[in-house]
Amino acid sequence: MNRRLIAIGAEAVLYLEDWLGLIVLVKERVPKGYRRAEFDNYIRKLRTINEARAMIRARELGIPVPRIYDVDLVNMRIRMEYLNGIPLVRLLMNNSEGINDVIINYIRTMGNHIGILHRNGIVHGDPTPANVLIVGDKLYLIDFGLSEMLGRMPMTQDIRMLHKLALDLNVTLRSFEALRKDQSQFLFMEFLNGYRDAMGLELAGKVQAIISKIRKMVRYAVR
Image (tube, helix red, strand yellow):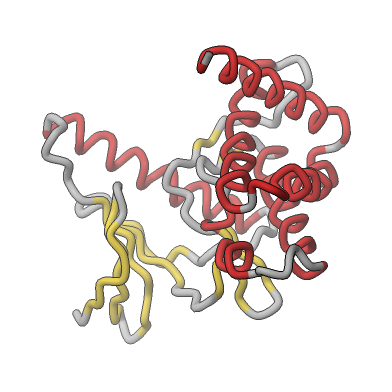
């Protein structure tokens, strides 16, 4: 099979492959020599399964994600649809004139997609603009490698579950701060506007309150 390497990450390698006459993106989790072989195999298999399940479920919920074609649990590979798009992070980094209405709409849509995941008990794991791809007029979520299926919808009294969702969104906020420190709060508020539409005001408010507590604890620890 013809293969072309396109990226090497901390957890996996990505390459394009001619598979059954179709050009697909392959994500392959490679062995880590610093882990015991049995444990390494367990971690790679678990994350491969979780990623595929989360992507399939996200698609069922109407969220644009790459199609899954094949899951190989022997070689820890996922073959998926190859999308040739523009990462949202590129728009945020290259827009020297500030944040325009097009970018704001993308940020709100990103928030709505993550809100749909959270409302259905799915943690993305790395919900940053680097993992959002703009293809034509659609905004796709990609890289579910650190995702987690919580098994149920969140309830207002389930603090542990809401804490996991808050940690997910704290990653988003930190990514905005790294990309556009001067406009990070504005971007996060626009993200939350889309998020609330999917989660509802009460649940979204609970998650936002936990984010504030997390960040206060971090500032205290740094001191």
